Image (cartoon, rainbow, N blue to C red):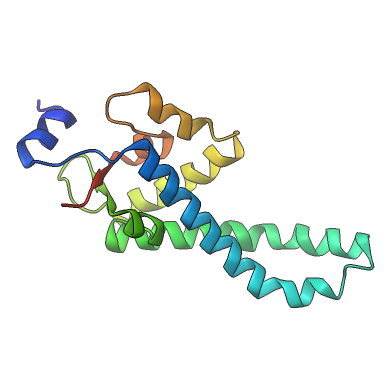
Length: 150
């Protein structure tokens, strides 16, 4: 059975660097958090004088924030193989079997594991330093790799 490294070499595909992946992550988080800030700031501004009401409002937004993250990452990885951050960094997420964009299910699994990894002190991202394919937890579970765009 052909290894990931052999497939990449055969196809002339290069893995994305950790630095590019980190920059793409940062760009995506700035975009998502900026969008959330624009959407919710006006309604939250009215609650700044009431800490309990503000806390309750922020708590109720958690599910919406999770849903937005899952929707964003799932859709862009499934449809384009890359989020806006990855596009800006000229890197792409590929399925390890066919070296094509991931299926909807794998994109969703990847998005879920990305959130879980972030909640676990980003340990899943650190995982990329310990393997030759630079795979994070989300890459492992979704059977994906992140590569340079040709």
